[in-house]
Length: 147
Image (cartoon, rainbow, N blue to C red; front, side):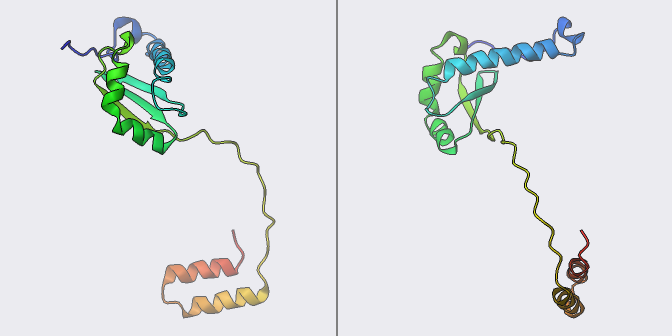
């Protein structure tokens, strides 16, 4: 078995640029790996490579069922993927759940509604009967309509 290569090891040329060029080259390699593995892994998930280091390929997906399937059948997929020249040192798949990108929500403001005087009186009276000081204060704040 060959000695694992640490792809994150700093070299002299990376010290001056603050590793930006090194990291961007790593991201481009991961993007290429993503395109390679996508047809092999369970579909219709959009898999994404986030790391490949020391024979461990870390991929993410958004569907928990697909992630479970990939984790369960890991050995079969490792044997398939390790036949590719780029992943010949692959020994393990690590699968993580990725949060889907959030769509920007439509802003809908709720109109403020003031409590009726009767409701405020009821809240103040309830605050007098409660022995828990925090709950009593919360009821009094609610009764005063302060935000």
